[in-house]
Amino acid sequence: MTSSAASPVVPAHGLERLALNTATTKRWTLEEAADGCARAGIPGIGLWRDRVQEVGSDKAASILSDRGLTVTGLCRGGFFTAAAPGERRAALEDNRRAVEEAATVGTDVLVLVCGGLPAGSRDLPAARSTVTAAIADLAPYAREHGVKLAIEPLHPMFCADRAVVSTLGQALDMADEIGAPNVGVVVDTYHVWWDPQLYEQIARAGRSSRLPAFQVCDWVLPLPEDVLLGRGHVGDGHIDIPAITRAVVEAGYQGLVEVEIFNRQIWDTPGDETLELICARHREHLSSFL
Amino acid sequence: MTSSAASPVVPAHGLERLALNTATTKRWTLEEAADGCARAGIPGIGLWRDRVQEVGSDKAASILSDRGLTVTGLCRGGFFTAAAPGERRAALEDNRRAVEEAATVGTDVLVLVCGGLPAGSRDLPAARSTVTAAIADLAPYAREHGVKLAIEPLHPMFCADRAVVSTLGQALDMADEIGAPNVGVVVDTYHVWWDPQLYEQIARAGRSSRLPAFQVCDWVLPLPEDVLLGRGHVGDGHIDIPAITRAVVEAGYQGLVEVEIFNRQIWDTPGDETLELICARHREHLSSFL
Image (cartoon, rainbow over all chains, first blue to last red; front, side, top):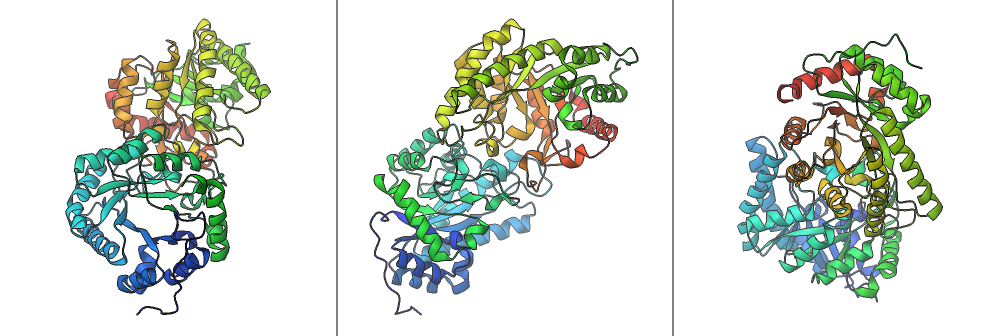
C-alpha cells in the first residue's frame, strides 16, 4: 500500500548531499521520518531495521520511493561473536535477512556492527577472526542481492560489548583479507575522529573503493551515564567534522552525508525542530565543499 | 625526618615484581601507603604528586627509602596543550618541577599525560605537535636529572579532554621524532587493550628500549557516569592482562607491574583489604611467568 498523499522531496539548496538516519529522530515511525525529510528538503535517509520491520520491507520501500528519497543504508547487521554455536548460526541467519531487507528497501549498503567479546571471553584475536570469517561467509549472499557490507569500526570504548573492530585501518585490513569486492567500511566521525591514522586510512578506503557510507555526529563532553547516548549535533562538540568530511570527499566518496545522533535530549525534541537544526548545521559547516 | 619505626619491606613470595600505585588507595597518605606495602610484602610503589607534595619530596624520599620500596614512577607531568601562552609556560615550568620531584623521591620515570584539545580548538594535529614540541623541550632537563619521560597513551575516550595521544604506536612515533634516549612510553592495560596493533607496538617499544613503565587494571562494564573511575581489579573485567603482561615481559621489560585503579568503590574499601586483593590477583594471574 502506497500513500498517494506523499509529496516527493525537493532537495533544498545546500542540502543536496544530506541524509537523516532514522535513529536521530527515534520517536518517529518510518513514514513520519520520510515525511519529515520531504518537508525539510533532505533528499536522503538511512534506516534502522526496527522502523523498517514495523511496516515490513515492501511497505517501507514504497514509503521511501513515493517520496523520492535516496536510501543511504540499512543499520544494522553484525553481532557475529556470540559464544554459543546456536546463537552464532542465528546471527548469520539474521544477517541474511538483513541483506534481503536492504535490497528490498532500495539500498545497496548494509552497515555491520560486528559484536564485542563473547560472554566470558577475553580473547580479542579470536573474536576478530570470528568476525572476519562471518563476513566472508555473508559476502557472496550480499553480492547476489547487490548489497555492500560496510564494516563499522566503533569507538574503542565499545570494544568489549559491541565491536571488536575499533579502527578504520583494522576494518580495511579485514576487508582486504576477505577480498570480496562488496565488503567495505563506514566512516562515522564519532567513532574514528581520535585516530592518529584517520586521514591516511580514509584515503586508503577511497583508493580501494571500500567507502560506501559516511555518517556524522559530534563528540560532546561530559559523556552521559550511558555512553551510547552522548553524541551531539555537528558543531556542538570537539570533532573537526569539516576536515574529516573533506578528506572523505577527496577520497572519492560521492554519496550523502548521513546524520546519525544517539542522544536522549535530541530524541525528546520535536522531530521537525531536530531536522531544522541538522539542516542549519549542514549548511554552516559542510555545504560549501560538498 | 625519617621514621625510625618503619619496617623495611620483605617482598612476599610471588610478589617480587608487584607495585602499588598510590592512586589505587586514594585515601591513604604516602606514609600510610608505604606502610601498607611493607605490611603486604609489596616491594614497589608508584606515586602521584599530590601525596608527595603533601609531605615534600625530601620527606617522601626518606619515607620510601626507609621501607626499602622501589619507586616505579611519578604521576604525572604533561598537560602541555593549554591555549594561552601564559598557561603553556606555566605547564612547562610545572613539568620541570615534576622532573625534580621524580629525581628527589628516587625514581627515574616521570609519567606524562599529555593533555587534550585546547579550549575551543578542534585541531588535533596542532595539539599533537604542541605535545611533541613540549616533550622535546623538556627532555634535556629530564636527562640532566636522570629521569625518563614516559608518554602515556590514554584511551581514545579521553582524547578531547586529557590526552591527544591515544595509541602506543602514536606515542612511539612521537618518541622517535623527538629522538632523545630518555623519552619512552607507558603501557597501561586499561588504555591500550583494545588496540589491534597492541602486540606489535609493545614489541617495538621493547626493541627501541622505550618501555620504562607498565601499569595494569581491568576494563569493567558498565562504565560509570565519570568514565575516569570505571577501572577494576585485575581479573574482574574484559582485558587479557596475562597476555599483555607476557608480551611486555617478552619485549624485555624488567621492571615491576604497577597496579593503578581509579574506582570510587575501591577507594571506599579499607586499604589493607584492597592490597590483599591486589596481591591475590597478582599471584593468580601474573606471578607464574614474572
